Image 1: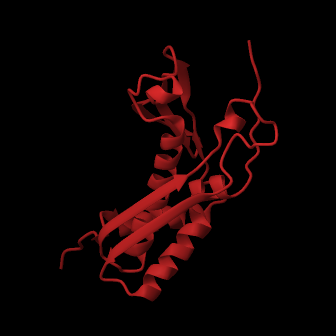
Image 2: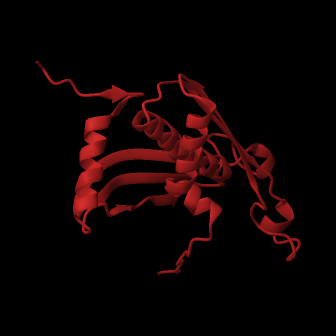
Length: 184
């Protein structure tokens, strides 16, 4: 009899199981450091470079460029998503991984996952017009649609697990200390 890797929703469940066991069995495992460097490209445009990340002390090369710009109404050239759209895209992408992987672990085959996130901020805060107005969001609304062979109860359990374990859900839903230093 040949052993076949179990793959559900594109997730290698054997590989996921090995990763979980390695991290569970060794407290020094599982630390991942991400770093992104961004340069101004004129007007409101910027370019971020992802060169590598470090996992368990090993640097793993990656080569990605992420461009951001503002729409013309916010003094940009409308050549790329703006930082708020990128923030929401990163949030959605992170929780998407959670929904897909948790569904696979629970044996639920997904046909479609759709996440729509939106938020409203007041430019009076961002522009420094009113010190009583926050520069960011008061709330973000997120709607998730899962379709597949799961039950309502399974989808609810998957949803609750994602809200407990998603790094970007955590980072946005709870205050995270940011140590910002101006260096010369």
